[in-house]
Image (cartoon, rainbow, N blue to C red; front, side, top):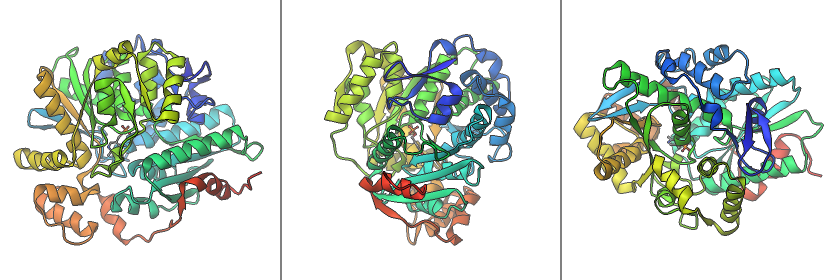
Length: 493
Ligand SMILES: *Cc1c(COP(=O)(O)O)cnc(C)c1O
């Protein structure tokens, strides 16, 4: 089974695709729709969460040996519950809690697995090189990747975050990270600046062959890496199996999912679950005030030329959504010409339009809605007061979008809302929304929120306060490449 670039005929095996992260033409690796056919999705539903992970990852990444062992090493004992992602009924909907891992964000599900895949890929290819992981983060990927990769032999990880674009808790999580192979640096700019800077550095290093003969190769922990995307398919199955087990649905019934979306990775994993056979109905794409995806799905015009808003759901403050490129490929019968053309226009003009047929295909699966800051805050308060469930701002954006969908299209099927972060990662907006006291710094606010709600504080967050910062570098976007080379001990030619 081969993976194919979205922009040209370049192909790679699954093992190579995980090691490289991004194709040499700048495109993203995609699996073919055919490779998803014939998957025994019904059989899969009967397994434990880890059993499902093994089965699904073996189907999507068949070139990896000993998947069972890799899955066990990734997850056993690392999450709060053995089922990895609990499903909680809230009102007439279901919240899929993806934040029960080591850093209290959904990125843990994929980033616990990715280091296993990368080290296995090294073993299997006999590559002597050290893998250098470059990561741009809007807050949660950075910490989850650091947690996954710190002190992993044969890897080194460099994380870049927007200096003023992450919450104080997210920042504290990253800058206190220990480990002999980690580097964390702030960029003066927003997440799009970080992401673009990293992509450009990637391209410059690869095209200039700057690591050649130095025993290093580059990879990415962002959701452009298929090793990041594939593990996210699993929890769509876990949620479905739980609805079957509880008697809410029969095997074969349709289930809708609402996904708080930034880079389109999480929701694309839902589309892959559907390709594998799972009866996924609508995938509701929920955006915050940076509603570039809402506008795209509703009009066919992707236009990033707009004001970048900083919101209370910073992990979705994104105007250039990387994984949409994969969806364009899948919705255009694999037209690398269409994808290259759109991506070129996006980078040159900041805007592109897709044809009516491609848009219709996208809209047959995805529904899009957005929540502004006021909607988000109101929703956190309402969900708390009506149902006694405390949700974080990202999850609230999804809740609000799910309600818009049901108002417009009805609610024939169960709705699963993907909850992507613990409310304790964003105590200020959550306290404001539920009418709590926001005095003091974020750690005091965590305590206030705990007193008010009685919801336990994740241990990894309460332990942060007494840790000293280890990483203090702040640089300009234009200096990312230089900085990376310096960290790797390379002088630019
Ligand atoms: C990353 C993140 C998202 C967005 O996920 P994408 O895969 O980028 O769409 C949503 N919520 C939280 C809390 C996140 O960390």
